[in-house]
Image 1 (cartoon, helix red, strand yellow):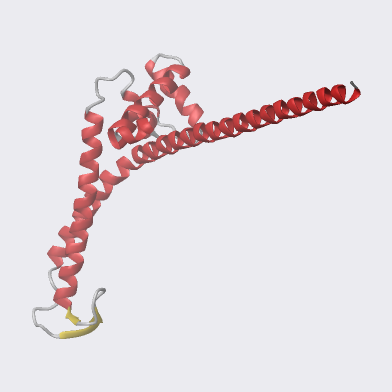
Image 2: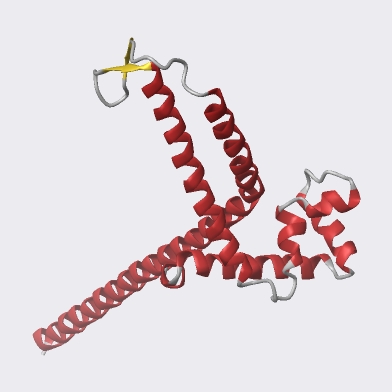
Length: 206
């Protein structure tokens, strides 16, 4: 009788221990899955932040890229007007970047002009690409914020500089007769749409 009771207690303890182990295992698995999900959410959020910042940087640089094209074209025109330093094929002791062959001054000048033209054409293509994207958004509510916020449009209107972005938002809100929260909402929505045009489905699935 005593042995039977002991066996019952022993079996009960073993079952209880087995259940406890199962619960611990489930808790660990749940914690692991939760951690993975948290990491996934955090990674997605970080990716979204990176997209947002990159698009903003692109817009901030846009006016400078257009100016760079203008300056590059002026420089190319000046280089062509200067012509080549000499008409003869005298050899100059200057190696090329890609080989050890010596070049004439004429060849060096021609190479410089070609490189400048190539760089200018790439910048033109980038600006044209941005123009095409922005052209898709001109009828969007609050589109004027793009120029006011990223292209210093509000500074041209008010004659003031806004190193503090919050002050710029307030100035734009006053100009458009809306609240600063509305300006932020419009701006963020436009950036999200530009990001879709730039990254396509990569942004949605990230």
